[in-house]
Amino acid sequence: MPVAHFMAQANAHYYATRDPLGAAGDFTTAPEISQMFGELVGLWLADLWLRAEAPARVHYVELGPGRGTLAADALRAMRAARLEPDIHLVETSAALRAKQAERLPDAHWHDGIETLPETGPLLIVANEFFDALPIRQIVRTSDGWRERVVIQGSDGFVAAPGPLPMDAAVPEALWSAAEGAIFESSPASTAIAADIAARIADQGGAAILIDYGYSGPAIGETLQAVKRHEYADPFAEPGERDLTAHVDFAALAEEGRGAGLRVFGPATQGDWLHGLGLAARATALVKAAPERAGEIAAARDRLANPAQMGQLFKALAFVAPDWPEPEGF
Ligand code: SAH
Image 1 (cartoon, helix red, strand yellow):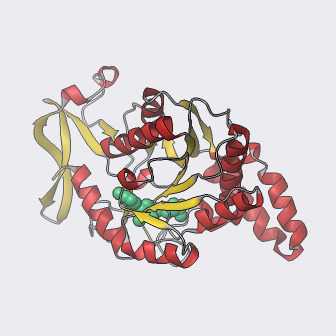
Image 2 (cartoon, rainbow, N blue to C red):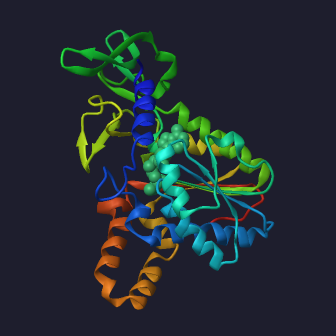
Image 3 (cartoon, rainbow, N blue to C red):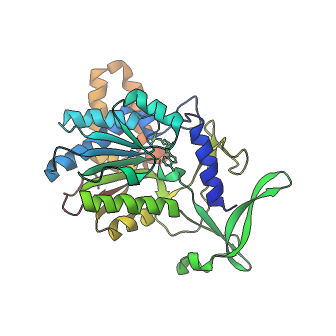
């Protein structure tokens, strides 16, 4: 089967059967590192909403909310700014929905974007969501470009070029790449970006999309598996390892522009968080709990230092055409 189908099916099983987050799980995300992350996301949204002079009835929407930590921190910060949106979580995993319900008992759950409310501005957040969506890989062979597929090898699953010519799906600028080169794209991601962009254009609001990634199109293989905080073979033990790929922010941005939105970024996570006042928030937290000074400084470093998450992770914003310019870009 194509790599994209393999990744979709493996991840559906993986997320349906566990809570993968945190030190005891397979990987840790920014909201699980510190409350500062979700709080700054919430303040970013509240600030935009205030300056937009938008109606009081707005919808907080999160895609792939994990344990609900980011939403809980963001909503607390929003409430301090007098913004009390209703809560809509797009989540396919029953295991994670149960976790989210512990923190966000009043939320409404959705399997996809289609069932989100159709009136009122949407304030949409996605952190480490797009990296989990399936990517298509196209590999350059001596006979041209072929979709990469997963086959049964002598010792488990391996990847190989498939039979169908795929030259038309590769941007012309990359045609001269050497044999073995891989071009990745994520039709599942661009479809969702297009859907949320169309909703924001129609209903008002904004989206903040945060993930690790690059600005494509580009050559390079980024499909990776993580198990217990270590890199692993992505084709072994399907459904037991977290499969992710780097996000092409240029492809997501194009969907935003195509819908007529204002698009900002991608900014690096470090720059974006500093622009929103990460240092001031850390100082305030230390003042309230001096015994936690070391832990708070370490969290701040992990989120924003370019050698850690600060440079690889990026933030991209979609904003409705009649909404103001967002902070942090
Ligand atoms: N945003 C959280 C969790 C990231 S893990 C955090 O930052 O901690 C990826 C999340 O996306 C999980 O909640 C997973 O169940 C969800 N997810 C993965 N594929 C999905 C899909 N196709 N539709 C909806 N949610 C999905």
